[in-house]
Length: 381
Image 1 (cartoon, rainbow, N blue to C red):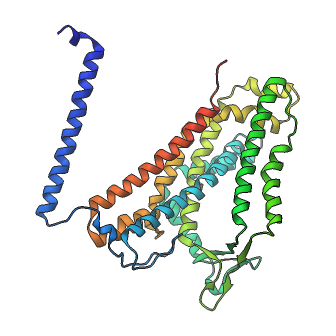
Image 2: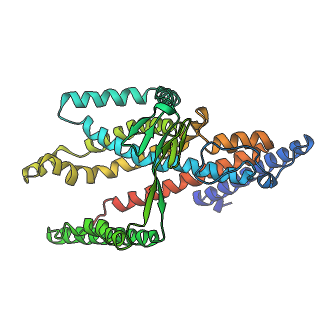
Image 3: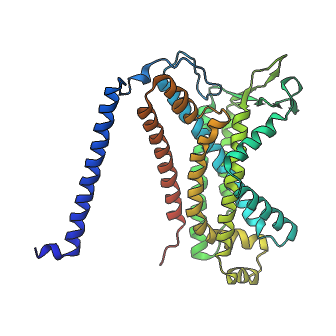
């Protein structure tokens, strides 16, 4: 009885009891669900993934036919969702950074215009904004009256048609050179940073950009530019050749970027204002220009305040992409948790797989951002 008076012992006991309670509750729910499904004559399991889907998908990064399986539908849905995140996160970050800095601009008109943008966008539901952008795209010309962008790209209410790159045998060497160039540029930048901290000097400012750009360019010209472009050609009713970005993807991308960018802008503004005014005054006293002060003094310190809430916005953008179902973009919710579920009736399995996908993506983004946050954190000497 004496050991039970120890708070640490009691804490361990309570945690064990709570864990057992959760396990028993989960077991009861699973057993009850399986029993009810069996009574209803619903088969459980993942055998449905090997069945033919029987429907087509309007946009896919992979080749897809109606005879392909529901597993293929799952893969296509995942890739389409990841595509939205990969396109949206960088664009929203750039927009938010620019808008956040401009909101603190000394120009009264610019600062007020940015404030209006942020306040309006943040207070309108995202779904309505996506529907708004879809409506705007529908006002574009029809296919036969497409807007020509230099005769290499075309825009209409159906899609954006772009040149499609066709890679040749030497592209592998170019990719390796690009990776090596990035690694070399990183090492040079790291060395210059250490040199600046030790001596106050950072020579060879041109070395990192030269490694990043020069090495791939040398390989590109040495291999004879190992790619060509398949240009879209206008037909009577549609375009042939090239690649197309459907209107639903453009509308979804615009809605997510504009909406998320407004929240990131507020994170940037808060991060900048968290830096004391004395830091700016000291930088100005050293002769730094306002641009140098922002780039070299304020933003490197503000980034430590900006990253944690911005990580949440990256996660929100990825999960909010599920609203694509309302405009017909074939993401994982629309085609797998929608069409495949309706055809197979395997609701539990399909929803569980969809939830697992979003969980893995969210944890991956969090892991990368937490690593970057720790890399930029102040280290006490």
